[in-house]
Picture 1 (cartoon, one colour):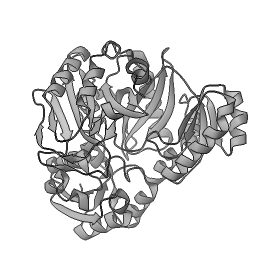
Picture 2: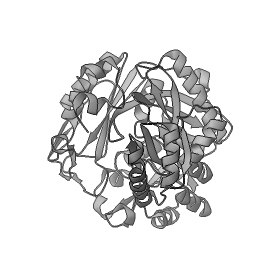
Picture 3: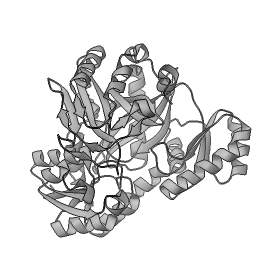
Length: 447
């Protein structure tokens, strides 16, 4: 097992990883920017190293500074968390070159699945259903020709990156050229890769993902699904497990497809297979996230499996002792992302000092966060400041528990979205579980 791990991240996920390491008896190293000198992850870690100025490109994306910090502190492994460098094949190669274990998949697999058109073709070959489309579009002329063959509406999507960037909905042929140029330019600016592919726009659809864990001994586990269809501009707001729309029969099919997908690419560590599921129960591969997901806690609660600890054990070469037949799905879990933003002002991001803070309590209530009273939220990073997760025997009970937990949550001094989350939870369509990715614009008028 590793003696010391450096956490190449910040915020709640850095705190989450440090806690897992503490329970495993592993020493930790935090890295931080000048804006995060009083951050919780810095105070919790056994050691901490400042790696640069406030902007992420000067600190949390500074690969050389992070690896240097690992070498100087004697860390033998790096956990990337999610976001930032977690899916950067170059960073993984740098870690390996310097003799530091990267807690995640190989650089080769990350690069392969990060290239969305390669991922689509790989899934096709593995027998995993994919959305009808065109794998790699070299120019606007090809886009127009193939769009006519696919039919409208369709999506132009960046083959690299994620987070909703480089995506355009195209409703007719006259829109194709302008959409291709703007999406490609946005992808080039965001990911350094302007490559695009096209796929048929399916609507209405649910966004369902399957949690995968795979070790170096050939064992693959699929820990069931997460419903992630409450989204604003392709950013998830609420996740739950299991999905009210996934039958036992459909779940079994999707689990088998997820395992086949992981096997096809030789996947190791934690990853997520993301699907689009239509109203008839047909499912299609969308992408694979080659990292830990923000919403992993809901899976932990319904399976009683600590995903972060297993990530670390897998990276250390330990064989998974659990087998697929041993995984039991019990109860229902819901997660609400608490963001420092103002929904009444077009979700304007916020920053500032927290003047009062109280986190909810009670049985099966969990608040993963890195904030505390008098903490100064810096304006340089993602707006998510916490994840409120609840667990109950049944979905209706879980919804009631989440509403009570949100009502108990107190964060003063900065704007946040807890009241907006309450509005979603009481909406009849959400309560019925019959919602799709168009839920917010269709039922709440939120673009």
